Image 1 (cartoon, rainbow, N blue to C red):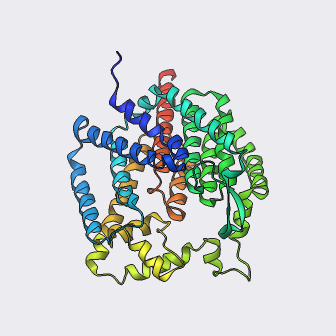
Image 2: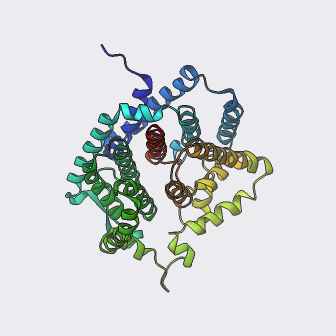
Image 3: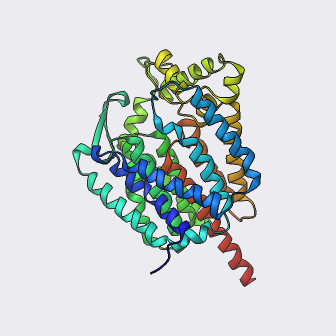
Length: 400
């Protein structure tokens, strides 16, 4: 009997998330993503502290991570608005350290599991393609102009959007590692989701990921730049004819808009960001340093805005929940991650900029670390692209 490699098992568990996210919207199966998350995270922590013997240099930061979570708990009034917020930041920070520590072999781990990866893409694609023809898989959202938006069987536009982002990223990584040009067909359903789900942020991020895919898919850089404009024009035309255009129209400022100009085009974000920060800076210095608890953003917007919201911005969200120390930890995680995967690699400047924008747009206008599929897809994308360009460098050296 073939022995199961723990790192391969861990990657396979990560790859299950977009499929499990689909079925999470079915009432009888609303627990499946949480179970998958717990199993995956327990295995990851076991690998980090047992197999990898986590590096001593990380321990002060992990200590601070525990401290801000403990302090946030003491500042949280139960019941919580969203119990998942207990785990999002902790998972993000620890999974970044894991991918940093295995940077030299994560590419090979992904390559060993390419068959499983593409099968996940196929299953997800079939399910979503079928549901695209089912009227009940679309939802009318009054706040978004009363138009119909695609949610598949997830029950939520942002669930289908983050799952689509992960699938598109897996297609990108698969192509980078195999050069199988036929996989371009698997970009259709993710792009359909971006055009039809109503999330402007995921639409923008999805287009950026597709451009990264297109950069390698085209035969050379001249072809890439010559064809990029027509591709973007096609995307703009599709936006104007789909739910994405409806959402943009619904968030375009007019004299009848409920909010001011920035409040309208940001779909209320600029309003509740101002409210969040106003009441954060009224807190004690200790609360500003270590955070105001997991409910703070919900409580403030519930009382001083139209309804309870989380921050829709990574920096503000971390600041409210975990204070200045939390923002320091978040910044540290991003610097370490980019430094690890960009240093000593031949990744083109354009691709680096696009990768940073994928994170930045999501983090600043939607939230990044709170969406598990978005987190996983970003890390796998970094690993796959680094592996591709390392292989390219090695081939250049061997033939020179």
